[in-house]
Image (cartoon, rainbow, N blue to C red):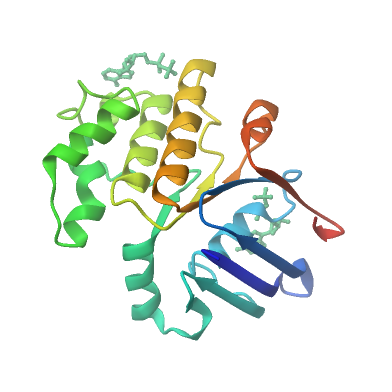
Amino acid sequence: MILEATGLAKRYGATPVFENVDLSLAAGELVALLGESGAGKSTLLNCLAGLDEPDAGRVRIGGQDLTALDEGGRARLRREKLGFVFQAFHVLPHLNVADNVGLPLLLLKRPDAARVAQMLDAVGLGDLGARMPRQLSGGQLQRVAIARALVHRPLLVLADEPTGNLDPRHAQQVLDLLLAQTREQGSACLLVTHSERAAARADRCLQLGEQGLR
Ligand code: ADP
Ligand code: ADP
């Protein structure tokens, strides 16, 4: 299993967001995570990435127990094995598009301009590498965030509504890319989405709600 979470629970104050969440993703699998707004999908993704600490349970990524690592260990595991597409993009405003996309490779001391160009082409931003983020539309920024999440061929991709700001053509392009990379690399992808078209292309759909994760 690429991702194995068992007995995950998270609460804010006395209010549980979710409890007893078990979740496994196998190599080559793309799974859609559905649920109403406020159901806890973003919180779950943050716990799986080690960006937020669950109150109970364990998370294993590539066999490594994330919950047993200290902050530095979690940061290293994220750099090496994880691609995260945030809802708010988190594109760095002072770096141009190509440098934003290449950042994960730079942090791994594996800079690779050809790979960056390949990813920009794959999300339809081949001509915009030298632009600054403030010169891009919301949909273009979202595609920058997706290219950056995939550039270092992570073992696990966690994507929070990656097609939410995209027109149908670009949404399909991004889904094609996520699916192709997941299959080719034998990685795994968990995709939060409200789009039925996106969910229909997933290998499985999971629903987060008052009954937990089903
Ligand atoms: P979703 O992504 O499914 O819309 P979220 O994970 O964003 O849901 O939020 C789940 C619940 O947790 C919501 O009720 C939200 O208000 C609450 N929540 C999220 N983050 C915090 C926080 N930092 N402090 C308190 N409550 C929070
Ligand atoms: P979208 O359909 O993705 O929402 P927009 O209508 O926001 O696109 O933008 C259309 C085009 O205008 C895009 O190609 C984008 O690069 C360009 N653009 C948007 N904002 C700016 C800006 N502040 N400076 C330069 N170009 C911009």
